[in-house]
Length: 397
Picture 1 (cartoon, helix red, strand yellow):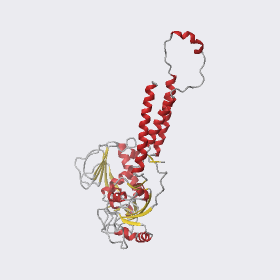
Picture 2 (cartoon, helix red, strand yellow; picture 1 turned 180 degrees about the vertical axis):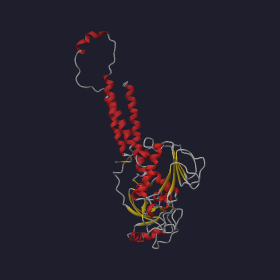
Picture 3 (cartoon, helix red, strand yellow; picture 1 turned 60 degrees about the vertical axis):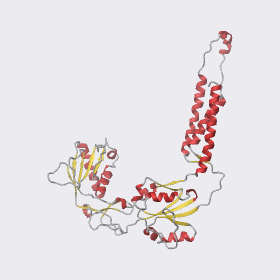
Picture 4 (cartoon, one colour; picture 1 turned 45 degrees about the vertical axis):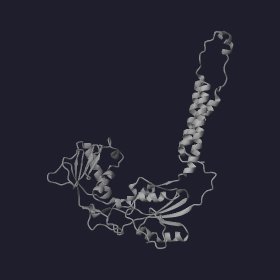
């Protein structure tokens, strides 16, 4: 027998509760007025040895009720009498020329072995000898991928999934896949121009193939970039906080960004007339907004505003902000600037860690397996509950 939620079985320890209540209830004596008490004086003075268990049947039924309830919540699956089915290898391929070109050899070999090779489309069309006999879909999305996976018999399948590694996959919280699962991804940089920044010492800041932000002397020659940087030269910043501690904390976070990514900041702590700022960090809602500037406003409840305004309800000090206390403030501020700089992160690939957390293997039982044992245990639970009520009323316990 297997359980869908085996950790709930720890709840069986609660069986100690009715046992403890039973012993405690027995110790509570009941005074009964009786005129012949004097004749029982000798019997009353005798010591009672050991513990007497009264209403043992009722105690056993109550313990069984608790154990049965825990088993029901753990959702058992009875599959010991079934022969394990044959596992079929299925190769599910995103309808993409890049994927077909990159994994042509693997897919051809799989077809020669008689394994199932299909496109991840609505009909799960099989791939023939000509890998290009398909209509590439610009509408391919994580939801369409999940629908294709759900059409497979997840318990009898070893799934090999072939995809373009794109941040668009993370549009959903998770993608459920069979327990036996292998992921094959490729980064599609064809026809995709990536943005970059020129930072201190003429270093280039961009998102690399693994989805990480890097600052290196030269651009990656295997990727295609825009002909000109999104931004070059110092980033003109205005810090305008009422609290000196918050001002110093944010200033130190910007210095950390300079150390790690060589971002060059020109910081003013008081506004300079007729000077335009690339980034304004403040704890006050600005009366006038510039579409060219990024605003990071702290200590303010989340408001609906323009895309270049970020709100946080925390004051950015170690005492009031988890970001500052845990040292994550520089990374968070850097992310705000990267988004504002139109870095095109939606087209950047996911890191291996992000991919691993996105695809969640599941081994759900069939509806017949799950419903059969659940219904039988539910009937047994109701029957035991009726027996417990009958014993409790008849024995006044």
